Length: 149
Image (cartoon, rainbow, N blue to C red; front, side, top):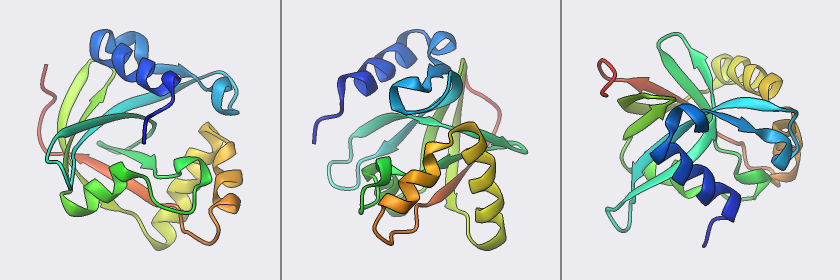
């Protein structure tokens, strides 16, 4: 499935000017103003190719938290399925790049992190209602060493 042009444009900008791409105008997706994004790169579970996607994030200690909302679709996003198959990934946070390991938050940690991200991007609650019973995953991306340049 092809990504919308506003997402492919954001990916291109993140790869050419990560400092500029870091803050995204969320009004295109129902948010209010500029919010922080990172670029997640996973290995495709079927193709083995690297696949990148920009995601809204919040810092979590030395880690980063993202939400697998897929706009409230009833199925998980491909990037999340890729992380379930291989949790090692790369994240670009503004100009800093990291190899990271992903894990899915659960229980109280998930609830706390969901609330944190929902404050950054309020439409997440609408997405959860639209997801037809699917619990939208909250994913912690833990860097595995110092930032790569």
